[in-house]
Length: 500
Image (tube, rainbow, N blue to C red; front, top):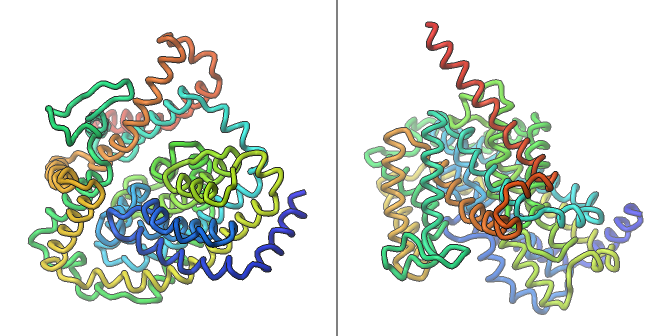
């Protein structure tokens, strides 16, 4: 019975004070690492993994998941304030968060993002609480063909995310996919390296992401004085942060929808928060009565992106606990923590340690609520970024981006990637091509190619193999349905324009 197990888990948590002492530091570490572009959540978790060696199992996992939870929102801070996704899962957060900051609504945007992250995390762990014992056999049914369709779904979101035209969105997405193919393929073939050994591992994703979003935007800001032009709006008021929180709480359905989507997508190994962030944003735009306002500072887009980003944490924990498989880089570090304490995840672990499993889930729900208070203080301080002169900020951010990219790659490939993609991104912005579409293609291109190769190997190259995969057919139908509204709207607009 879930009630008995949850009650026992609550007793375990209350009788383990060490579990609560490590949570606040973990949240602060996650917020700090997530808010610095180039420093990912998984890096923070890996850096502090040795610190858990002398902890008991429950406090150790809660400490690492606190870093996970804090970093989930931390990445939204530079995404909103500087148009720089702190993590790859904060890409869609930039679409409406940064335009809100440019209008002087940075405090409201941060408040909305914080509530979205907190409630998204809660939704993810509530679903985990309800499904952890029954989800494992469903996840195991997803083969390479299903994963391929999911990856293609991520690519086709380009058509929804692009405001200019579907053709420009597709072209930009193809560019991202082509960039993702540089280096060795899954079949062992070397492509697009031009004989350079530095490109054998491909174009590093995080430096490219920083370049496309941050460097290209910094080039656009040259000549301006401040991020927010109106000096009256360059203030950080606590009531504005609370106003953003109230706005988000006033739309529980949008938050719940993004949270559920993030949790479901996060439960699929290898997909993670990056696609969840984009999928929830695209869905919110399709369902909106004012889709044209998305990308121009619509709070609903920000809420959808952040709630899905954070709820995917709970989804990824499903595969870790139910199958013993990491859903992404963060849960891979958690799997290492399991091994460090001689614990193996999977159905047997759930069956024999149900009280510990529920203690972890309840503990993470509690730390999400704690994030609401710690995060409020953190974003109140971070909001002062708008008061910095761009003459000072542009060189500082550019240097930090270049240095951070060097720290990621360990060689000059990182800095060169930032500058090169920054120039490409600037040109794309100038001629109306969506930079976001290229980033989407870059993030999911490698996954799509890998799953395509595995699908071809299993099917022997016969396309009819798909007809024996009902889950694949359902996913294909959902993919087409997601594109239908945009295509129909485009046809109707062209007909109206022709009749005028």
